[in-house]
Image 1 (cartoon, one colour):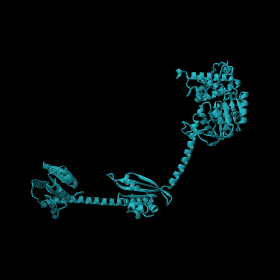
Image 2 (spheres, rainbow, N blue to C red; image 1 turned 90 degrees about the vertical axis):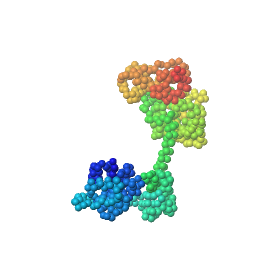
Image 3 (cartoon, rainbow, N blue to C red; image 1 turned 90 degrees about the horizontal axis):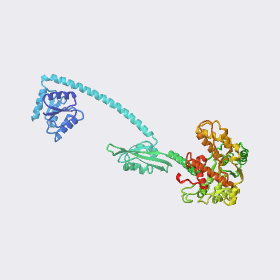
Image 4 (cartoon, helix red, strand yellow; image 1 turned 180 degrees about the vertical axis):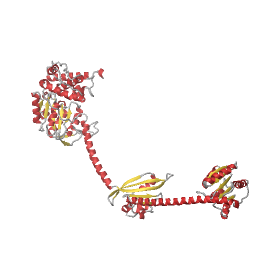
Length: 635
């Protein structure tokens, strides 16, 4: 079945032609313009093409010329079928392009099919005569239809022209607004093409380069850089053509004493090549000033932060910043006398030595001294001399420089420097090694110290409160404590009597401890049986107030109602003759009992250290001193 390609922009014509030709058993292909016709023919070459002349994109004349120039298509017959181009000159031009026929619309289907058959059979080129007089009426009607369509198209074109003019006006207004906005921007904006030609620049060029935009536009970028902008753009545009990414740099303009930020960004075309480069130069002097101010403040903050970190490193393990002391129970005359002594000496800077058995409340008295002193605005700093090994006690007290000894990886501020302007509480002073006693004595006498690894003296203003449960008189006689240091510390001695010597304080202490634990455990205790209180009053309390506190806590944990049953521990043997040995053995037995009850767990919540009310490091130091070792089966 022969195939015919119809090229016409009129859908009605295409429809009618398809009906006629398919009725004569022709296969019909269609296209709405010359470009589409060539595309269809090259994909599926027809046996014949019939083309209109007046078509969009590519008309029939151009289509015929392209058709006959194509090696694959030039042998395929080409027929012009037109209603507008009816002059003899049009026919001659069409045939000169290589067309086989030039037919004027309209034609009767039989006549048109006859011409198609003749051409397909290799007939010679000839023109079809114009319609006879009988066909003029049909031609006139057809022409009127085409005229109306032409008028419609003209009207459409006029509407499109008006719309385009309106759009043009809007574009011109938008361009003017854009230009005004472009020029109002305070920093330089410049567009450069790949040939480094400046396409446009805003008005900021005048203040930066001293030239108007029209003097710069069209010039070569490198020429401008050499003449008027040397050192003001950082050559970022050239860098963008090399790196193909955003580039920026900060430049100091020495002439104007200002900072500039020069940047450039590539604009890529559809193939990924650089089509334009947007170049900006912004004055960032004020920003730099603000950054410098911020950096200065950050440096100051960092300095304070490091100082605080150094203090925290020292304070984290052993030093406590103590809160205001709890109320001291004053039922006994002995405690009333102690408070009177505290009130006497607190306003002075005199050194105070607090002595008493373990657990009598020496730290509570030290806090009271500090809170009543003129130094109460600063935190009380404390250190337990028994909790640190002899090799570290000096660096903890006096500080060290980096590299002062093996393992000293950083500088550390000692307790004396931390307590400068405040009070330093030296707990367990009797456990201070002799080597450190001499250096402590010098600090107390001269008010200056040197860190380990340094020969620079540092002045300190520290009020000393020391405490011990040891008999310093015997230690001085035995040569284990310096006599001169003892006299220097013992300026104002305060001796806290053991709890067994002030039993009238026990009921008030019990209720004070109950109130503390009630808040923590969410319990409410209303009463204590008389037999329980009598048992507490008759117990010797070798661990003093600390032991009483632990007994009360244990009782609250195991109690189930508002009445608190308290049973004191079993009495310990009192057959040892020498008082010092009896106290140490009592302490040893008490620690052993607590450790066994807690499964030899020293630290952590519910551990022996928490029950005893002391730090784990202090407990471990006392265990070492008293020769207490964990049984092998408990490891």
